[in-house]
Image (cartoon, rainbow, N blue to C red; front, side, top):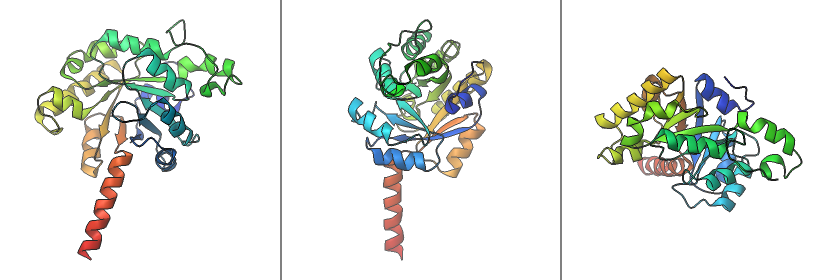
Length: 256
C-alpha cells in the first residue's frame, strides 16, 4: 500500500468509512458551508453543472483547507483532470468508466511521470511554484483516483476496471446507472440494486473501496448503503439541502 498524506485517499486504501458531500452551486459559500460542517471531503461537480474552470477555482478556495477538496470532472479527459488538480483538487472522480483501458487513461492523466502523463506547471496546488518540489514529490501518492461506475457496461467490466493499478476506488452513480438499466430515476429498482451489489462485491474481492452517492440521505438510505458494503458516501448536495430545508420550513409554518 502506497503511503499518502491525503486522508481521503488513505480512507480509500484502507476501506474505512469516509463521509463527504457534493457541490452543484459553483460559489465559495457552498464550499464554506459544506466543508465547514465537518465533511471529510467535498466534491465539486464539473459534469452536471455550469461550473467551469474559473468558478471551480473560486469554489475550491472557499474550502480553506477545512476538508479534502475533490473534483467530479466533466469527462475522462487529460486536460479536464489536469486543470482541477493544478487548482488544488486532491482527488478526482472520473465519470462513465466502462473499461480497464478507460480507467488506465484516468490514472495516467492524474499521475506525473513515470506513472502517468500529467504535465508540470507552477499552479495553485504548489503555491505557484513556491512549493513546486514538495508538491511534485508527493503528488502521485496523494492524489486519489476514483472511477465512476454508472452504466451496464461499467458493471459488466468492474473486475477488470478495479484491477487497474492506481484506481483507488469505484463510485456508483445511481441515477445514470438506473437510466442505463432502463429504469431511469428508479434507484431502488431490483436491477439497480443488483448492479450496486455486484460493484460492492467486486470491491471486496479486489480490496478496493466502493462508494455511493446517497442523494437523499435519509437514515434508512444511509443504513442500507453501509450494510451493502459502501465505505465512502457522498451525502446529499447543496441543492438538495436547500430544497429540502425550504420545503420543510414551509410545511412547518403552514401546519403551525
